[in-house]
Image (cartoon, rainbow, N blue to C red; front, side):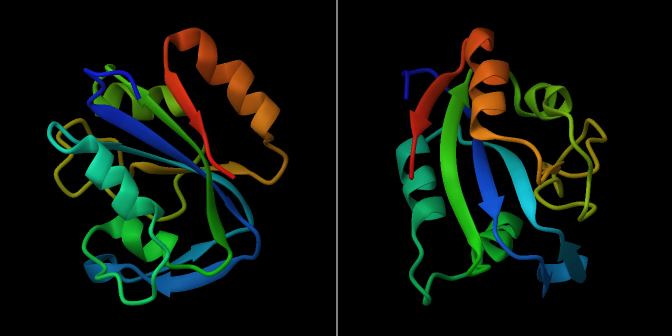
Length: 142
């Protein structure tokens, strides 16, 4: 990822629907399909992303996104970085909110959630077409 990136997006595929408790938010139902999570890290971006990508069963669930990533059917397929502020990038992502408040407990912009559901018809090609022209620094993970 390019130095200076403070915002990142995890582009994830959820193979099967799931319903799980997400910390204090309570139980959330997640339909099958594509999701994007927008987060930020002013320091230690690489460590934050490595932690998100870890799949070990004993990983402490610290952030809301950890609960979603703990779903066995969830895979991170693409990571992008940006210098665009977190809430601006989240707002430009589109999609819909399926778990109110997820990743947005400190959000002052009224995002509602920093996890967006894009649907099952969305594709990686759509993602590359939509994101690359906006100056994001993509890293492909499979």
